[in-house]
Image 1 (cartoon, rainbow, N blue to C red):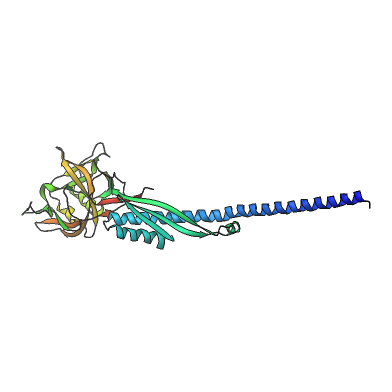
Image 2 (image 1 turned 30 degrees about the horizontal axis):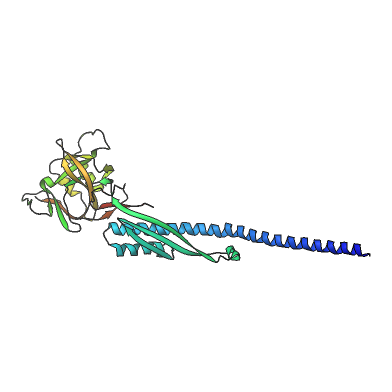
Length: 310
């Protein structure tokens, strides 16, 4: 073999070796890219699931904390409740809790180990989610009981007596709700949502509503028809232990309609059904119920609802 041919063979071998080297480099780059895609699919999917889990933890923690605030249990108790629901019950590694006006914000986080992403140097990452829940007065209630009381600054968790029939009234007693301070109402007639009302409810209707509540919604800032007179059978259907929604009014129209400013939660502790003095004794409560939320500036009677705002 002459020298020119030998040079050509050497150059050809070098070129082939160079091409093989380029193929190996491209194959390595392709494998890295493939692993990155696999990491994106598998580890990205895991991160998404953990993100949803942390969102559930943050939502649960914020709602639990807001319920505690709405019950007037204080911020330390609300923080404990938020931590309990975010970390213990829903698996967050950490839960930062902050408070605002009537609201609780929770940021729940969890460290998530990577699988394929470790190839590109990512061993773990922290996944976090945020939620805010607030309590507000309600704008309406279902299952209303047929009682209305005049608006006044009542205390919570102390005994009050609502009289239906009393011979010896004591209007100076601040814990007696009697006379013009209390009345019976007809939940089937409130304007709005009704535009016109049918016949007035009888004592048997009021007794049924006292036992089971009115099957319909009644709203703040509506006018509800009143019913005068003594109704011993209504008192008789009250049940000790029930927490009942009742109307709080600020005025009565000439045709006997009560203007609703809010609703109160009243826990019945005693019922006197017979004798000359028929009455219900109980305590006003801070009570949380699933109900349409009102505005932050609405009158707050203790009957409240909690909802996520963020």
